[in-house]
Length: 139
Image (cartoon, rainbow, N blue to C red; front, side):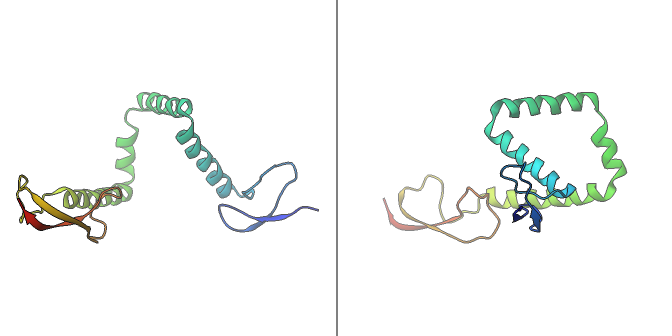
């Protein structure tokens, strides 16, 4: 008797095949595509040789198809417009996160400061802190 399991991609129940040890995905084409994509992402992260080979293969493809992306943008105007809008949002967020907004302190002002986290939404990178500096004492 075969067991049932939830697909890791679509969440639907499927019958596990005894021949496929550790089966986590159903046979649907979309789910198999997700399985392959996840495998490839993990392989790229964990296998430096595979990662380097993928980079070389992509570079070779770009050499063989030099005008592909230019032609794609011409024939897919909606994609191009949406991509440019997304890039403008990313650029605006990056600019806001990096610009110097400090007016109370000059860069060379010595003293003792308290550093405390400030919630500013999505303005900074995920690995950066947004902080407020408060002068406790001046030298």
